Amino acid sequence: MRRKLLCLTVATGLLLSACAGPTSASNPSATAEDATAAGTSAAPAPTVTPEPGLPYDEIRTVEELDAIPSTPGEGYFTMSRNGLWGLMRADGTEVLPCQSTAPVSRCGAEDHWICFPDPPMGWEKFDALSADLTQAGDGALCPGHGGLSDMFFYDLDSPGRDIHALDPSALRWYQVGTPGEVREMDDTLWDTYGDLLPVFSAHEEGEEGDPKFPGDPVDDEGVLYWYFCKDGSGLYITDAVQAGWFFDEELAPVQIGDAWTYIDRTGHQKTETIYSATWGAQGEYDNPGDPNAPKYAACLQNGYAAVCRDGKWGLLDSTGTEVIPCEHPGVAWEGTTLWVKSEDGWHREELPA
Image (tube, rainbow, N blue to C red; front, side, top):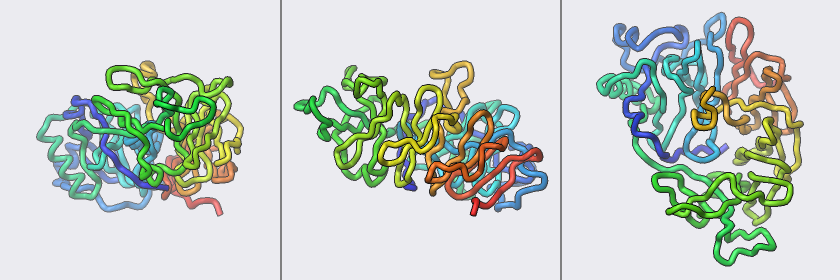
């Protein structure tokens, strides 16, 4: 899977949205004050998974806010306990304790973490904690800078567009920001995002020519989201309302109605439409009643994806097979490390043979 970090638009309110200090995975309930009192100046070295397992309610893929749809992070997870969220390395070492009111996400080329601690902290603590994270090799806290993220759409207002066929000249790269900017496709982006891009059809609207989503369906069957292929063809999945990334993987998640399925590179479904969203956060605009509810089904990362159906979790491989059946209270995978939840907490496990 590709690795990429771009800068994105972040609200200036994040200037005071820092997390609390790093602690050991063997003591997830420790606070920033505990770390300060102990003279801790950096995140600890990786620790062995404690017995019983890690006591988190949920472990979720980190949302990289570098594109729309968001892209999944690697090397870290965001985890929750008693309704609050923190950050841990993939090996289970806690970097930020569960004190954020939202899942910890990551933005930009500067490798900045976005979190909302309760209670908030001032500039002095923010700067000190950010420095500690940097010293430990765990990035820094987001200071609230502005920036850009990538989105791709099919421009129904493209001059000279062939209205009788799919026209590669109408593919647009939209850099979301303040203001956003519509650009013609840059061929180098195929190397970054893979040769199948999730797109939607849209008219240019507004002062800056912003694309409006949802746009007009691409066909008579109501497809809103679809895939534009590097060879100029398209993949259409009937009734698709959201499409995830392929990158260089064999499958990608597609939302149909309220559930998700996985399709292959020819557009054929490899699973039933039975899975739930597992990562990202819907946000207050889309879901004011539960803004932390997951937004996306998992993209495959190094051949696997954690999946959930009927409230039970498993692991899907690149053939669409549940190599770990959806029978567990939790499964987490970010491309390098597998965690499975049991009655006594989360435990690291090897991939199925």
